Structure formats: structure tokens, C-alpha cells
Image (tube, rainbow, N blue to C red; front, side, top):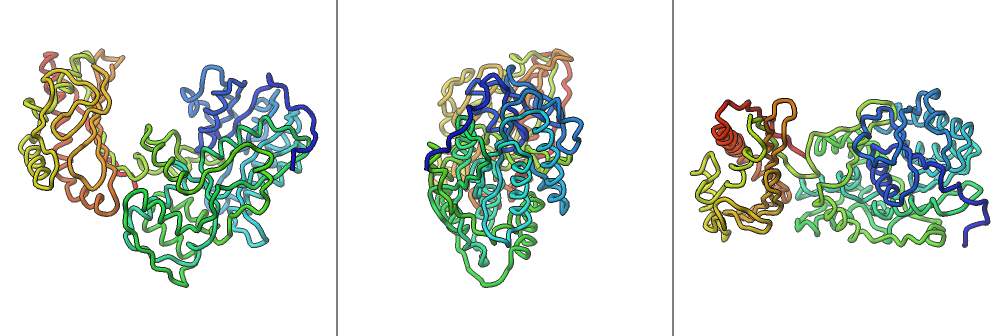
Length: 506
């Protein structure tokens, strides 16, 4: 049905407030709104979390929804406020904190004359909702009770590069060739691509309404959690077997999840407890009132994988802080399933001089440490039908994007600053090797950062990386040290060498 008659939308000059802009959804929404050129204001407990991440036109105000006296200044003059805050990372007290935060924000918004609130909640029906879904829907109720017209989106699970739901599915599928699947894996949902969710949130600005509304939103396909896992496995080229069993409650499954994917366990258990509830749209008014036409599960997963290859995803669920002020669920450094080894060396020479051994790497010069091991790896690659080291390099001192370099190919190149190589040897996954050179303002020297990234394909890929980990450590540490020594020799003085421990992303 068409939207009801309503009063005019808030004046375009009134700032739009985005709460939760440091989080997964809020960060993406912020960029989408900035592209529209509307006046924006972000609210955060610590402004330093947003500095450098927003445009010059976007205001930053420090405020905390659990400190009522901090809210009036942040809400002053606001026309529309996005409420994207939750406390799910705060143990068993998250429902109490969510309730207190919503009451404080709703009261302050009413007092400040905010004309509209747009809120993102969770989809679910019936009386027996999980604590997670119950809290999300209670927050929407509290915002509506304030008297400020509130548009609440109730969304099914979100599929996108960096989203918690997607990370959990991927972690299970990547690690477990055989999965024992309890009944909840057959529960139905309508997974919504994160790009479609952002489109709904942005379009809500142009929808006029004088009374509160609730919209249920989901993707084009109704699928089970098992079907989501199978589709992910198909697109990653993984063979996975699922053995259904009639036992294993969500509670027991959450304990098992903590063993298999400990990085996501703390928040993941709360989400997993909610899978006993179907998250299927029963009221499809959103398809009438909005122009968004959500994509299906295949497209959503494909887009998530593409986006992750683009700068390893724009934002991640672990970027967020919970509303209680402590770090949310911060996993180790890394990107999705990728394993990352990153090291730095400081050298007392200019960036141009520090980059010389980087741009000359490979070919006749070699790899500065362990050249015998590199040649052995190239020979093994030839035995399994790979390219080996026989290609060498086009020019001993110059590189360009697309050049071959032994069994690598130049994927990105900025002279005196950046070289990124993509592996073309036979591997159970994908690999990159990157070098960045940046100036050190204090000393006049330069910092060389060397980063090796491996995207393993399933369990075989992980066994490959960790089986060769002792050699990887010797090679990568020695390679950077050799580069630093070459740069130091050119500068004629000692360089300070530091190495950061490898970090694994699960």
C-alpha cells in the first residue's frame, strides 16, 4: 500500500545524526550518507575513534547513551537520528544496558526536538524470542514510546564482508570438511545483503511519515542456515558434508562454537541462541514503500567475497565498541579467513633509497634471504604443473602493474612507496606479498613494512600454512632484514630493526 499522508520531512539543512558510526553498519551508512552531501553529525564516546574516518564536513560530538547529561549537545538541532547502538558484547547484562541506553536516548531526543528516529532491529515473531531478538525489539518499542516518530527496520541475518553472521558461517565452512548439523541448521531465514540494508536505511530519509512504523526486511530467498553454508562452500570451491542429527540444542551448539571459532564465540553465542526463531518476512510492505529490490543469497555471498577482496572489506563487525564503553569483540588482526604476517624495519634513509631493494627484488637479485629455499619452492611448483621461478623479471630495476616476477605477478605498484605481488604458484589458497615504505617524521628516515597474506582454501590450506610456519618465519624475517641491510648500506649508517609477531586471522 502507498505511504500514508504525512507532514513534510525535516528541513534538509538540519543535520542527520548517526550513532554507532564506528560499527559495521554505522560505518557503511556514514559513507553512503556522505556521498549524498547532506549535513551529518556523528556521535561517539571517543572522538578519536572517528577522526580521520569522516569527511571534513561531518561533525563529531562526544556523547555516551549511558550518560544522559552528555546527550543534549549531540542531539541539538538534529532533524533525523539513526539509532544503531547495542550492548550485545557485554555479557549477560546486555539487555539491561540496551534498555537503559534506549530510554536515555529517546528522552533526550524528545527534549531536543528531534523529528524522526530510524532504528535497525531484529526480525522475529512470537512470544518465545531469544534474549537477543527480544532486546532488539524492546529497544524499538522504547524509542516509539518516546513520542518521536520512529521507523524501525526488523532485519533477518545480514550477509556482507565483515558481518558477524557471514564471518561465523565462513569460519565453520572453511574449517570443517564434515559438519554434524543439529535441527536449528534447518531453521529458515531471509538473509539480507548488507548493500541492500544500507539502501533501505538511506532511502528512509526520503520517506515522509508522521507516525511510527515497523518494516520487516529480508533478502529475495528463504533458505536454511545449512543452505547458506552450502552456497558459501560452492562459491569457495569447497566440498563439505553435513550430517543432520536430532540433538544439539542452540545452547550446546554455542559451546561447541566457542571451541571451533573462539574469536566469535562471545557475541556469536548470543546470535546462535536466536536461530531457534525463524527470521522470515511476514509483512512485505517494505517492497511497496521502498524502491529496494533485495538480492538473493547467491548474489549476497558473491558480493561479500568481492568486497572482501577490495581492501579486505570496508568495515568489520569487530570495529565496533559496545555501548557500555569496553572494546567489543576484538579478534586478532587479520581479515576474514586470511592469515597475516606483518613486520616493520626502520632505516635512516629516504623513502626513495629504502625502496630501491624492494623494486629490485626477485630475478637475478633474489629474495635477500633463503634463496636456496625459494629455488626449492620453485622446483616443487614446476613438479605440480606450476610456473616455478623460471619467468624471472622483465627488467632488473623497473616494475609495472601486470609484470611477472618469478612465480608472482605485480598487482599494485607505486614507485618509492608500494609494491604488492600476487602469487601464481600452485597453492591451496591465494597469497599476496606487499611492501610499503613511509617516511618517519621524527628521524628523517623511513619505515619499511612487509606483509604476507595467505587466504587458505579450507582445512588443507590452513594445514599447508601452519605446516610450513617455521620456514615462513625464517624466510619472511630474513627477507625484511636483508632489505633493511641493503637500504642501510646505501645510507651508510645503522638501521633500527624491529619485527612484529605474525598474527593469525580465524
